[in-house]
Length: 495
Image (cartoon, rainbow, N blue to C red):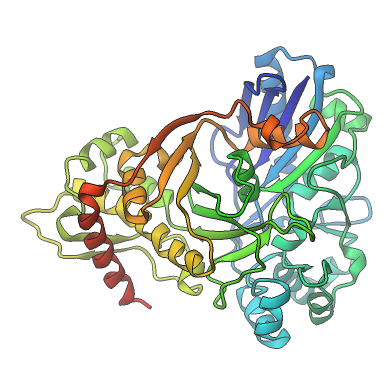
């Protein structure tokens, strides 16, 4: 049997076909080949048309089927990973009423901050484990206040993954994990938060019934099967947000285990069995994919908006035409640890949660000497600065009881850079294990568990292999600590 994984990102939609027995990915494809369009009607806004996710899913699916030669009838189950914290609103015909307000849209920050005060900080943290912040519930309140005609026509609210699952099955459903990421879930009562619904004035009927993260969530009707080229009746058996799913993809399921990603933005995601929270909501706690009331599994999520986007900006604007990341790394590797006194704060991609939602922009600091420093120093200092931002956030996680001894990551994006991963390992003291997997492959494995093809996670991940282990550089530990100290001193000027 083959398993299908779908990953709905904000840049592209990816699919992966995995052979269940071997765990091998036999084909993968993504669309569009250039980044998917994000519209910004105003500064700080970010929207996407949900129908473009479906359009690109169909194209990626067709390419993967052609590439693999896999028969649609041999695909036994589908799993979905998706960009978190977005909001899709649909009418009774299950059609979107407006573009989706996606994760990086910041229009609802003030709404969430006001709700935090009005509901009560202690109450929010004890029951929601977070401030309402700029999450899905606050975005819905923005529509209620600013687009009442649309709000009054809403039949169901959805996360991006809920929308794709609904397109696949015809049934609107959600998950407990999804409700927690939208800040709708009361962890004390193990139910929808009455405080959030009542404060914002939301009718409970707007929220779909819950389905299990692992397990039957519906089957493909004739229309969806024809559009995607899949067999009618194919089961949808798994659904999770991209960061919980990334952790799952790396078999990060139990307390003390930690996963990381470093694409445009960067995430460290650690598992806890305690209802822990940061009083300033600089990191956030959500229900993990295997969370149950009787066996709590919470994902403590650190997000840094400005990570790989800084490296990309430097390549496009500082390097020569057609400059590659490999060439950047080669130049940076000639420079000693600490970039001879140069420090870079990578926070140039909007307000940063770990900085209490301040938007301080990216900064070049330290001692800049025109006779010493070159663009190679800047490349090195930037990668170190990204790793230091991770370290800064991980100190907040450690104070909550989630401390990393080993970090698991996919062999992709910033983790392809020897400088970045060695700096991160050395400054945190954690070893880094790199794996050849991604979110779409993880979603396929999740579908295998949900369909009962795999008995448990041990069976699902029996073929997951470590590509490389990066250990802290003990000989250079003092140099990394000194560089991190200069970096934190630079950051303190803006806080």
